[in-house]
Length: 385
Ligand SMILES: Cc1cc2nc3c(=O)[nH]c(=O)nc-3n(C[C@H](O)[C@H](O)[C@H](O)COP(=O)(O)OP(=O)(O)OC[C@H]3O[C@@H](n4cnc5c(N)ncnc54)[C@H](O)[C@@H]3O)c2cc1C
Image (tube, rainbow, N blue to C red; front, side, top):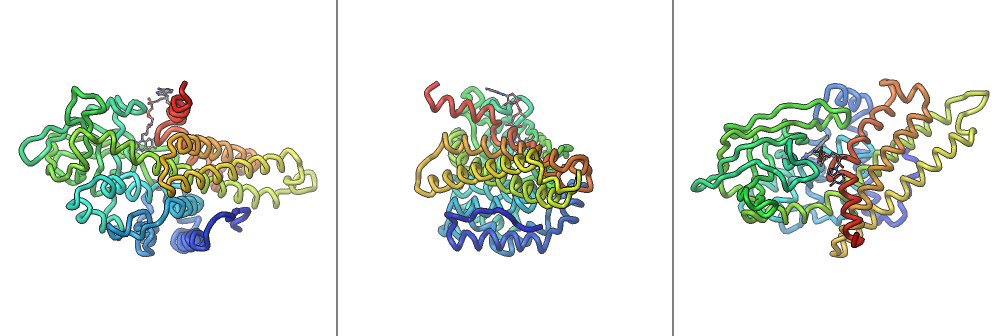
């Protein structure tokens, strides 16, 4: 399929190279048939993950100080968009370890944690998962009850996490725990918990989309974790979680932009060949206008994502802009996939075409990473409402 209509205005030469290299690399290691197999089987993309690591892409968002390549937020947005264009679950696989978990260690971890774990994240040998959500604490994340009690040089952890992406293929969890249960969000700490520790059990969940990065349930039964695995200060974990949100949401927006563009290219390839009433269906204004709407949505999404990236690169904390970019991207991604299905008629609904996967993969966007209702609450609150 041609990579069509991808406006690279405003990207540096280096960023265009990032985009092209990642697309070429993924096309080499992950054919469309391979993606279909991984999606059907619900399997992690180990081979492509290794190839991305070998090519150095895991290091991009880490500073040179910790051995990374010190890429900018915009470089990261370009990288994530390209990965998600190829396969949405590939971007999720990357983000789960490198950003959602890895950035906690890079930004708040002790020198010991950084030197022990970051090299493995960057060379692809260590995978991690972020474990915040619980059965009783989704949008109300501060309501977590998983308890970590300090006993000498260890914490003893008891509780349960829910919907944790990729815990089954991770060696470590970056987990939010309550160290002072009476303190609300002020009693939260972040612990690095090995998944092979005694008392950790993981159960796979079945999901509609992003099936190569499956969600899991994690149980902690008297799990002993070394106190040196505390990331940041005890009871200051909430602040750390909040600090990582801007980068996380920028990445979610970039991933939505990538999936959305693939929807457009895929639907366009199909529609220009599909003849009804003696002409390609793109000649019908009702179809062409759908493409125009999709293109508008994709362009707006990319503008907002890159703007947030540029603001982060200038040292600004763009909280309202990041929330807006996350909403616009994930809502548009789903809307585009829905239009793509409509444009393809019955073919879009068939498992032999990829449109149904784009549709399924897009649906988690408005729910995950702080639902779009929660983002709208943030936006309204920041407007003083
Ligand atoms: C596939 C998948 C992967 C995930 N991966 C991870 C992961 O790796 N790590 C992790 O920690 N979590 C993960 N999550 C959890 C995800 O972050 C939560 O699902 C999300 O935050 C919503 O929480 P909830 O599902 O409990 O919904 P709820 O909080 O129960 O919300 C249900 C509905 O009520 C709305 N709602 C709730 N409160 C408000 C409010 N104050 N105002 C307006 N509307 C409100 C929500 O927007 C939603 O529409 C994942 C979830 C899924 C589905």
